[in-house]
Amino acid sequence: MEKKLVKLTFPQDRIKEPVIFTMAKKFDVMPNIRRAKITETIGEVILELDGEARNLEEGVKYLTKAGVIVEPVGGDIIE
Image 1 (cartoon, rainbow, N blue to C red):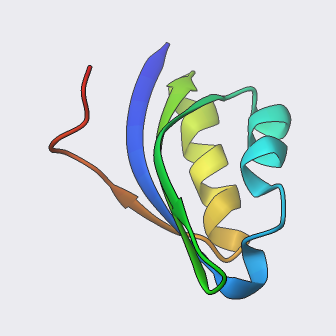
Image 2: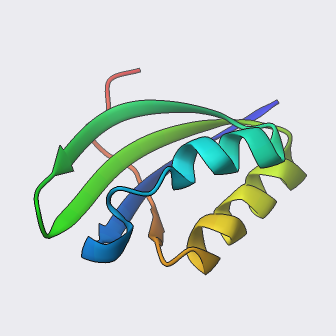
């Protein structure tokens, strides 16, 4: 199992869609929300993903295709 820490930025038209849940189920990835800020116009989520390397890669591709901006994270997340 591997871990990946990413920042997801959701555009306004994707905020209410269950893309994290769908990605987790479809690619057998366990998401752990570390931080989130959601407004009426944008959503930002720091997400820790656990799973097999290939599943993590496919899950991130799915999120990107769904219109979510995915960026790697480092920094002030408490382990």
